[in-house]
Image (cartoon, rainbow, N blue to C red; front, side, top):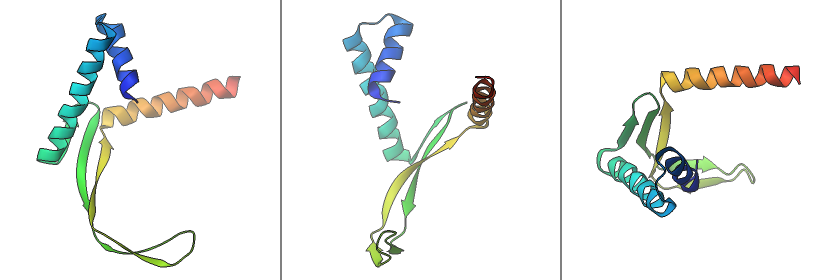
Length: 103
Protein backbone atom coordinates (compact mmCIF):
# COMPACT_ATOMS: atom_id res chain seq x y z
CA UNK A 1 0.00 0.00 0.00
CA UNK A 2 1.26 3.45 -0.80
CA UNK A 3 0.32 6.90 0.42
CA UNK A 4 -1.18 7.54 -3.04
CA UNK A 5 -3.41 4.45 -2.68
CA UNK A 6 -4.54 5.62 0.76
CA UNK A 7 -5.26 9.10 -0.63
CA UNK A 8 -7.29 7.63 -3.52
CA UNK A 9 -9.39 5.49 -1.14
CA UNK A 10 -10.12 8.54 1.04
CA UNK A 11 -11.14 10.58 -2.02
CA UNK A 12 -13.43 7.81 -3.33
CA UNK A 13 -15.15 7.09 -0.02
CA UNK A 14 -15.57 10.63 1.30
CA UNK A 15 -15.64 12.77 -1.87
CA UNK A 16 -12.99 14.91 -0.16
CA UNK A 17 -10.72 17.07 -2.35
CA UNK A 18 -7.53 15.24 -3.30
CA UNK A 19 -5.23 17.75 -1.58
CA UNK A 20 -7.14 17.46 1.69
CA UNK A 21 -7.16 13.67 1.42
CA UNK A 22 -3.39 13.77 0.91
CA UNK A 23 -2.98 15.80 4.10
CA UNK A 24 -5.23 13.34 5.94
CA UNK A 25 -3.16 10.38 4.70
CA UNK A 26 0.01 12.16 5.89
CA UNK A 27 -1.59 12.77 9.29
CA UNK A 28 -2.60 9.10 9.62
CA UNK A 29 0.90 7.87 8.74
CA UNK A 30 2.48 10.38 11.14
CA UNK A 31 0.13 9.34 13.96
CA UNK A 32 0.96 5.66 13.44
CA UNK A 33 4.70 6.42 13.36
CA UNK A 34 4.52 8.56 16.51
CA UNK A 35 2.61 5.85 18.39
CA UNK A 36 5.16 3.19 17.43
CA UNK A 37 8.02 5.46 18.52
CA UNK A 38 6.46 6.36 21.88
CA UNK A 39 4.87 3.08 22.94
CA UNK A 40 6.58 0.52 20.71
CA UNK A 41 3.27 -0.82 19.40
CA UNK A 42 0.34 0.21 17.19
CA UNK A 43 -2.74 -2.01 16.93
CA UNK A 44 -5.67 -1.85 14.54
CA UNK A 45 -8.38 -4.21 15.84
CA UNK A 46 -9.39 -6.75 13.21
CA UNK A 47 -6.30 -5.96 11.12
CA UNK A 48 -3.17 -6.52 13.20
CA UNK A 49 -0.38 -4.93 15.20
CA UNK A 50 2.89 -3.21 14.36
CA UNK A 51 5.43 -4.07 17.06
CA UNK A 52 8.87 -2.54 17.59
CA UNK A 53 11.51 -5.22 18.14
CA UNK A 54 15.11 -4.69 19.06
CA UNK A 55 17.69 -6.69 17.14
CA UNK A 56 20.80 -7.86 19.01
CA UNK A 57 24.34 -7.13 17.94
CA UNK A 58 26.40 -10.08 16.86
CA UNK A 59 28.19 -11.85 14.08
CA UNK A 60 26.32 -12.78 10.91
CA UNK A 61 27.40 -14.47 7.71
CA UNK A 62 27.35 -12.65 4.38
CA UNK A 63 25.34 -14.99 2.11
CA UNK A 64 27.23 -13.90 -1.01
CA UNK A 65 30.80 -14.25 0.19
CA UNK A 66 30.39 -16.47 3.22
CA UNK A 67 32.55 -14.20 5.37
CA UNK A 68 31.54 -13.28 8.92
CA UNK A 69 30.44 -9.68 9.50
CA UNK A 70 29.87 -7.77 12.76
CA UNK A 71 26.34 -6.33 12.94
CA UNK A 72 25.33 -3.48 15.27
CA UNK A 73 22.30 -3.70 17.54
CA UNK A 74 19.26 -2.00 16.08
CA UNK A 75 15.51 -2.04 15.91
CA UNK A 76 12.89 -3.08 13.38
CA UNK A 77 9.12 -2.93 13.11
CA UNK A 78 7.31 -6.22 12.63
CA UNK A 79 3.69 -6.74 11.66
CA UNK A 80 1.54 -9.45 13.23
CA UNK A 81 -1.74 -10.05 11.41
CA UNK A 82 -4.95 -10.56 13.37
CA UNK A 83 -6.80 -13.88 13.11
CA UNK A 84 -9.56 -12.16 11.10
CA UNK A 85 -7.04 -10.84 8.55
CA UNK A 86 -5.37 -14.25 8.29
CA UNK A 87 -8.73 -15.92 7.65
CA UNK A 88 -9.69 -13.35 5.01
CA UNK A 89 -6.31 -13.70 3.27
CA UNK A 90 -6.60 -17.49 3.26
CA UNK A 91 -10.12 -17.32 1.80
CA UNK A 92 -8.91 -14.90 -0.88
CA UNK A 93 -5.96 -17.13 -1.76
CA UNK A 94 -8.22 -20.18 -2.08
CA UNK A 95 -10.64 -18.23 -4.28
CA UNK A 96 -7.80 -17.03 -6.54
CA UNK A 97 -6.45 -20.57 -6.80
CA UNK A 98 -9.87 -21.92 -7.85
CA UNK A 99 -10.27 -19.11 -10.38
CA UNK A 100 -6.83 -19.83 -11.87
CA UNK A 101 -7.64 -23.55 -12.13
CA UNK A 102 -10.84 -22.79 -14.09
CA UNK A 103 -9.14 -20.41 -16.53
